[in-house]
Image (cartoon, rainbow, N blue to C red; front, side):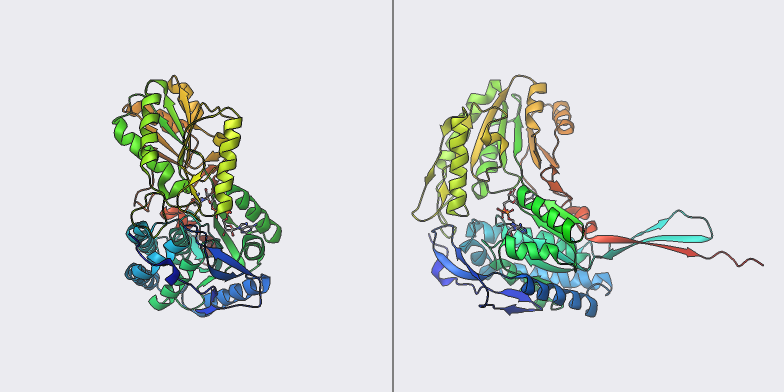
Length: 495
Ligand code: NAD
């Protein structure tokens, strides 16, 4: 069943600056395509350095002139909560807008992305008046205070895999802390961010506090990083881009950066793991949800020899049961890859993996409806730690399998040479689970489950090349505050 007619959704490409849509046909435009069928459905302007400057200056003016940073924090919380309510109430507009040009099935956009975005904004709103400073231990006739203050204008750059949710994590944390935002969403999924900004203004966020500049990374993203009035950058995307952003920020500033980057997360399964049927379903979902285009996708199965064959066979059955289809097709269970080039990249890594000795147990290659970039869920076994499919983030539905004999070997295989975003450990032995948890170098470890919950209070972020700093949790709000030290001398004057 078709949930909506994709041709009816024709968003206007524009920036959102100073509380209004700014169209711009003087500059280069990008053609934006629907990954579900490959059709072009919109044009997107590319903000050059002058347009980025206009957005940042507007944000700075709004931050200085409005009371966003200076009002009683509970007032700010009230506006953010109202914004969350408007987002939730806008689901009939937001869900198809999100789904049409992304990899998010509209069913999920309605049931998860939009409500999760709203609830995330509420979570951050609650921190608006809860992160005060400290009184420092000083001599008795002095008072030492450590105050928290917002940075001013925060720049944010986001990826395409969960467009709305990724934006809400960045802007929610930064705005609850009292900052203004200039956001550059991914040029592949640019439109829901503008709707979010419009709703913010309707909720009472002062015009100019939340701005969106559209464009690609090399022109618009780079100009945002280098702008001297952007006091802090926050980024989610690939490790390679994160490094480029960090270096652009350093060369032009420097300024602090938060980086949420790529992953290559293990699913470490011992032969005493409870309920193999449930586990197989969980592991299959963790690599095929959003067609594997999830930073914390469980992409490396590391399984003890005794149950390896049985577990792989069941996972392959789950893979075979998936039906690829458009994000507006209510019956589809596997969404597309974001673009044809990205599907080609996945296929290239799978080919190189096979050349390097991997055995294709299931899948490989594109399939599904014409025009779309669907990739068959794929199981590669017989891989070693140097195989390209183990070393590189694939960002598609490709699971590698490595087997081990004992706990020591399993734990050693679980940590990755470069990445450390998340890990799953599956065993009935709590001591073994905790030993593995301690030993694995990753920012998140899930035991006998896999994937994020609705516990926004648990921060997310990586070790090693998976990133610096955290999204979500108190830590995300704290990262958007700087500290001012105050020392007051009230010693009585000497007679
Ligand atoms: P990407 O790095 O290609 O692009 C991300 C954003 O950066 C886009 O908006 C892009 O336009 C911009 N960009 C590209 N080059 C730039 C430059 N030189 N300067 C400034 N901006 C630039 O990533 P993607 O393909 O959009 O997303 C997939 C990646 O994101 C994966 O690696 C995935 O693991 C990662 N990711 C991480 C998390 C996390 O929480 N750790 C969450 C989601 C996605």
